[in-house]
Amino acid sequence: MIWIFNGIRLYLINQGVDDSILHAIIQIIIPFIIYYVAEDVFDVSGVVAVVIAGILNISSGRNISNFTPEIRLVTSRTWDLVVYVLNGIVFVLLGIEIPFAMEELVHNDNINTFGATLLAFIIWIMLVVIRFLWSYIYSTFSNNGDGKIVLWSKTRFDDCLMSGISGVRGAVTMVGALSIPMTIKGGAAFPSRTLLLFIASAVIIFSLLGATLLIPILTKNSAPVAYRGSTLTSENEDDESDEDSDETPIELTEFEANRVILEKTVKKLRSEMDDGDTAVYSSVIAEYLYDVRNLGIQSRNQVKTSQISKHRVRGKKDAELWDISFNCELEAIDELYDNHEISDESYDLAIKKIARYKKEIVHRRSNQTVEFFYNYFRRTYLQIKHLIYRSVNSDDIQQINQDSIKISIAGAKNALKKLQELNQSDSDDIDDDLIYIFQRHYEDRLELLQGKYRGRSPQFNSERMNLEIKALSYRRAFVQDMLEQGKISKTTANELRKNINYSEEVISIGVD
Image (cartoon, rainbow, N blue to C red; front, side):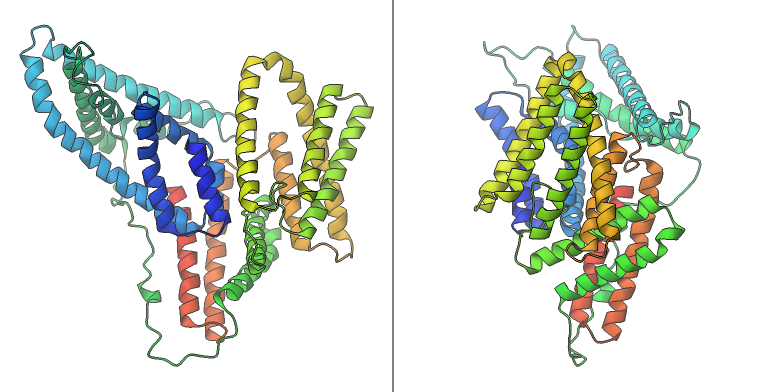
């Protein structure tokens, strides 16, 4: 169900429905709908269903980039508020349940109160250890774009230890215990329900006391406390009224000014590219070129997209460049097959796959709604089918997977070679920025396939974040320049600054 809801949200975004309040409300009601359907329709645990839906939603986080910074910021802050309120409800439930659980536990001769408390403490210790081990192992073997694995790090050890100790443990368990019925089918009391409630409540209390006592000991600095929402940039300076001053003749609308600012920012970043990390600059420049391209698409009343995709071709030039790239990939596949480097089955699958892509580019469905949901659910179905097939026939597809990697690497290299030739040619048939976007697309694919992809390494992300903040400062400067030159109004400048502030706040959310 979470895939269905995500598909609906992406469809709304593609249709231009980008109201942040609407998307925040949709995100909030999704868990309640899933809980209701799981409990009343399928007669399974609603709590477990919601937890699984949350995990699947996080695993499909690649769709987050489709949403505007405003939507991402509002939904993030909304969930901060919801989580804060729910944590408060947990303590209300603690206050209600603990007296009853304690009373029944003390008067129950079959249950040792001290033993139950000791059991809750042991469970809390186990939760801390499991969380610490998971965090340490994951941080050790992930985010290593250079291929080096450092097994021991004092800083990572301390961070993972604090991660294991901090936070409330047992809240989900207590909610699950509260969802247990009071009686079983025969009318008798549910066995050990009071014990479950007591243990869950005690684990929460131990987690609070443990964090309160141990975190100050582990942290050696005394930085000021930062609360949720305290990093939001104030916009009071942008809310001044324009009524006291006469309007300067306006030359550019907000849409036109935004495009000019983005183009100037790209030009500024390209001028600095030789002095910094080329990969980091290329990543940020490509993202800005996506935005410039989307503005051009919107100006022609077409559906916007967050990146180039063979599934979302929006112009003739896109189709031409995809056709050129696919032909290069086909040449690479034929060369591998002629040299007997791939099997007949892998060759047939690769040829059929590219043929299907080329057919989709030429034959577009007239109804955009049907086209969107067809492609979305088709991709979801193929992903699920691939996971099931891989788990059942792992030995059979091992050779096909190896051949697929060879095919993808060779195709990407051949396409990049052709794109480089087009970029160096004097022909004006295809825009240089579009070629740049395609080059970045194939470079990312090549790095990922060769194990050199740095898009998730801490160092790369840190450098990219710093460059994004610098780019936002350039955008602010360009807004001020255009305002002083009389090319935009104060109202337009305030809207542009507001969007920049949203983008900057989204970056700070990622850091937090």
